Length: 617
Image (cartoon, rainbow, N blue to C red; front, side, top):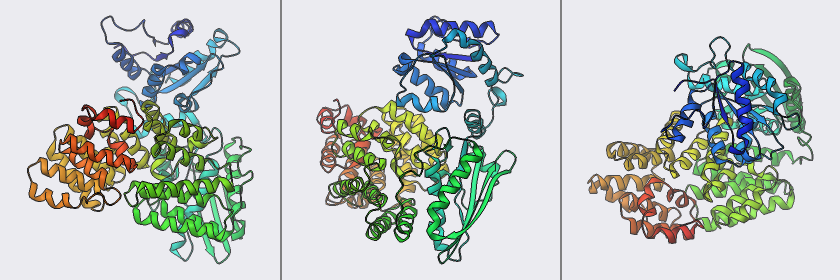
């Protein structure tokens, strides 16, 4: 295929406008690829589209109500962003952006022709493309034979889109005499991240990715490159009794310039004011508009409750069964210390669901407790989006009530709310109710916000695996294990995919690693036992099979379902799957969409199971 500088993405009702834009560009020496004109006769249409996008330097989206409703346009833009291409959006009417396109349009160059008309704006369109294409090579930097690393491309794309308006907040260094005060310094940085995340037009890297550089000897430019940002905030906290010394400095990564720095010597009681002051200083330095909602009507809890809340969050971020249980206790202690503080109630709810996922408590216990916590938070503060999001997730995964779930997610900011393995919860709702393309789009957005966090990639691989995109799912799993080589859930998923592909030796090797890392994780036990049995090693398999229990404990039923499905025993696998559904185990709702359940989904047992999940048979 002859490479073109510009791929034009449009919906067929806008064909005349797309042709006008194409003509204007080509008259100015910019080669374009547009369908159906450039599809070679006899060529498979979808292959032609994919090839043209991959060969282009810039993608121009003709944005309209028709385009917003077109799944073909969404897939084209998803492909373009996955290839780190610059996207220029030309809005031609007052379109209401759906969630599937909202991210791409927020993270792209765009021009508005809805008032002036396309013809009047064509010179600006041509000029915009010239700025996006390297004028010396006619290609975007980093493409072709001189292609940069994927990390460099990520940075190039982020910088071209957001300019000076992207930031990572590193964990503040704990300079206190007590090393256990790290939860406090981490909490301060996380609160600043949360405040900045509400600023329109500012890209803020999520906590997990920003905090992954703790204790590493790496310069600011290297950190910024890895995270795809142009600015980094770092600082330190020294606490002595009720006195605080907090330092902060905002650094322009490209040249190391300090755009702002300050030292605060204050009382502990001023901690909330300090958070607001640092956030306001960053807003001023980056020259972005401060949202009126930031800090407005924010409840100021007692200091003792706030400290306990920070400690709980520090524990919850470790995402182990033990740390989650300790986090729940700290959240509950924060509630005792200040019963008007809504956020610890939400923390309690999220921890209950996380404990359920790890098989530490049954859903019939965890879900009512989580609902009670979320409703209590809303009684205190009806405007907390995380509580609405939690209730939406529970309606989806426990009740399979898609209408009720959607109602909760319609609350402002609820679609963006997340917690640890879920974030954002709206993505999981889309997946569970069958809108997998939408879930994939939202998961990619989360990865852009937190490129070094394993859970967004884990979630994306689940969605990809459910639609048979196994190579793409494996790619995400490999990236997860590059970030965290001990991620047991990733190993379990990878072992099942390898087994499905017929590579039993590789599957067994991965399953053994998973079991060695987390012998308490029943799903890892089940997968290893099944693969050993398939390999003919029943002596090694039988002791593991006995560990699966008698379905008396949380996690027993889905583990048994996994074991039998992986062994090819569809009927027994279906029996255990139905029992797990009755127990409302979330993991079975996921596994039934994975390759391990291919045989079950093709069997006469599937329509009944699909109805139990409120899915089409």
